[in-house]
Image 1 (cartoon, rainbow, N blue to C red):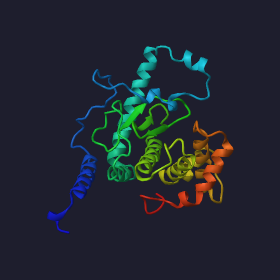
Image 2: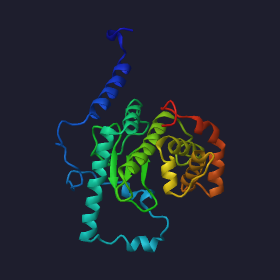
Image 3: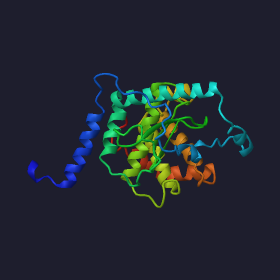
Image 4: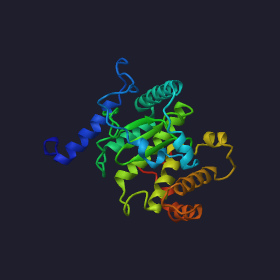
Length: 269
């Protein structure tokens, strides 16, 4: 087919891909400011309202006590975390091979769920919103079809840690646009197990160095053990999952096919 005969659908897909590529090019000079300053026109943040922000290790009384107004010192520390998080995020978007690769492939797939009107708007040049927010100690990030990707600004130990977390959530974003599930992702435990297996397997979460720092290492099939362990923990944290045994059952049922599925990569990164 000649260039003149390209279909409208192909042209639209190519334009999304082109915009994703060009937007990831490093700027000539650092003219874009970080976005941690409060803005009057900014829509109400809704990540804070979700279950991911509720620390399950604390009861309602403790969480209520912590809902007090933050001190000036805490606000200063929160702003510092936010600026560091957004600086690392923007650097990874420009320079990380795995993040750039996944953003390009996410951009080629249409969203299956419209973005919420309250979705973060500080990364309009990207195919999916990526927001920095403070989180409970049990999380490093999150993904929502209607809000985009969450990076927990107070939980990132280093830029390489953020790279793994961002790649992990981008695998979820790609899966959410590529595959159909029964109902919602959170309600279909097998689908949840599959995307967790793939994200742990492909993102770098289970590299030997990361496992060594967690004091989890062995001489045989360490990568597989890590992927299985972390996938079970993630599914067990799903409110729709009744027990660790149910999470383990869901992971085991989809393990063979989902661990072997490395799309959109040709092999494990």
